[in-house]
Length: 293
Length: 227
Image (cartoon, rainbow over all chains, first blue to last red; front, side, top):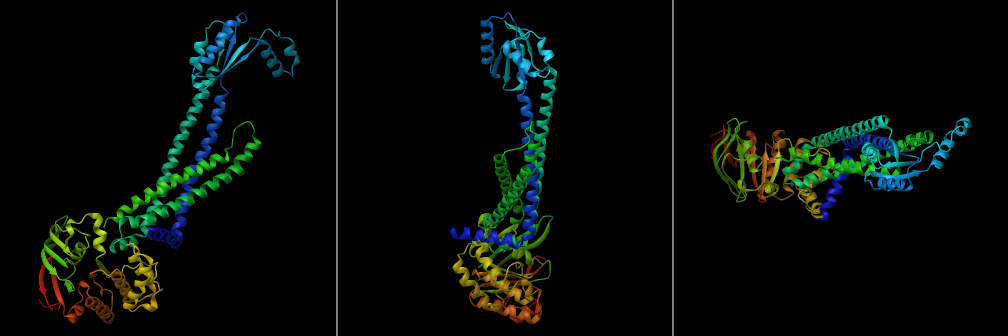
């Protein structure tokens, strides 16, 4: 068996070398297809992060009546905390609300001086696990003893959620489309490479090579080409991150624009896996026609 | 070595390629299969290699009914049969030595056997000085000798040749036939499909003639034309 492995490795290396043009064509096709897929994936990650950071800013404000008893306030807080949709609950007292108010308008002392520190209500600010649950949570809290009013962005937030939903759907469609294109392109390139060598396959059959003996070097080759393609694509994407996204991030601080090196490495393995799977299935399928003698 | 019992082959669309052929080729025989184009020679050869299945009848190769052979055993059948073709079927991007070694590599023979047998068989066909040449640097006769070396390096008991002299001039053809005769003397059963009159007439070997898919003649020391 050791001898056979040697044969397969020798055969793979010498075939890749002898058919340099075919190898280059295959590797560049794989690179470009995987690059497209990778760009969509990275773009998707950036967009998803951006969208989630907007959604994360959605919170409920539960304003309390001034005459609410400390017991009512406490009960309300623990009720909110007990809801499964709720992530975190902060209490803001009247004093804190006033401090916040002064901080917001610190450049216009005329506004703050005319407000009674007692005019602002105390409130609970509730962070949700999923911003879509804002409405049901709000309606449950509305009307509880001690509650004056519940605010949750209303229409504006509904529109934001609709928009982020559309963004996510488009992303999924884009990934499916580019993945489909990559599969077709890579499978087709492999088929051409095998077609160019159908004579060789015919001779192997005639001198009594078993189908697996013929198949294995092609599968090895497909795997090597896919791996090289994934490497090139990931390197280009990494360069794009360092020279493009990272610089944009430095210029625009308030939006999460860039991705971590870790997620590029994860993406490399994803692309590698996709490439190898397509390589193996593509060459096995393409060989089937020529092995039937 | 090769026995056909009432073999017929009908291609779909009811084209009859072979009609009720029965014949028996003994071990170490040298047989010509003659007939004009379309007489069924190629179908005959293809069925021995199990590239085509007979529509009726039974074919025995080396004592085994190849109709009973499962698909995955077909490569092992072919290792018993060396093949030589009119168009040589050499790999253009491999040298003479590599083309011959290829036949051993693909059946998984170890390197030391390859290194020992390949130069020996190339010497036998008289091409030692072309060991590292590429096929396009060789003449037609030399390419055919490489093809024969490849067919024989695995030491199969049977050699099939489909029009081996079809692309060669008369004196080169004679060389190739001498080489095949020598292989036959060393114990290989040889079956040659041809319509080269001169080659058949000179050899005075057994001749099986097909015409329109029927076996019309089986003569022990035959010539091409007389029937």
